[in-house]
Amino acid sequence: MQTVKQSAMALFLTVIPFAVVAHPHSFISLKTELVTDGTQLNGLKMRWTMDEITSADLLYDAGNAKPGDEIWKKLAAEVMANVLGQHYFTEFWHNGQKVKFMNRPTEYGMTRDGHQAVLTFVLPLAHPQPLAGQTYTFSTFDPTYYVDMHYAEENDVTLPAALQKTCTMAMHTPKPSEETLNFASLSIKKMHHPKTWSWVNSSHNR
Image 1 (spheres, rainbow, N blue to C red):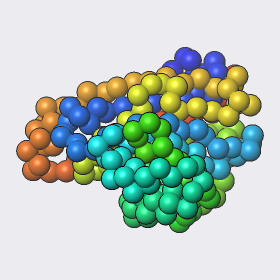
Image 2: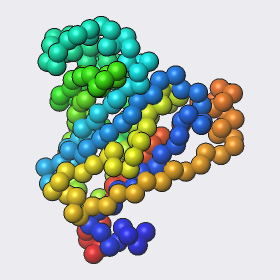
Image 3: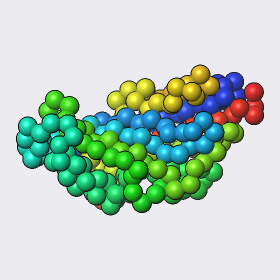
């Protein structure tokens, strides 16, 4: 924890490889940027890139549509409705309490990246949260294990440029217990170990 005390902020990522724990049928690569105004945390800007098989139906419906065509808005709305039905597949915590989100994203859209569909949206917090001296944790996961949602690289979660000089990030991958693996593989009991980011602003400890 010495690195936390020596930096203004620290970000920690905990990742569980769902492909090992269970047998997902869909894969989504995540990228997230924290949305702030410099003094408050306002939300998360997310980019979800779906695997080619999952993308196939969406891209078939899109056909040869160009960026900005109406079909992309329709497809984005359909996918976003499912995401909202699962509370954005995300949990956000502050001081042991869940932080609430707004019911709808402030913006969202869908595009194509080769043979993959890409959903982007801004997940807004219901109330802006202070940055100074605070600790935050957020997790994005599918508790059913049907979808493997993962950050491929440590830098897939980023801070605004104005905060990058005073923040550090690190990735940690804990190992699930044998009991957890057995429960997941046998479908006896649904358990989840979400990917978790913890943000510690310890500027007062400098």
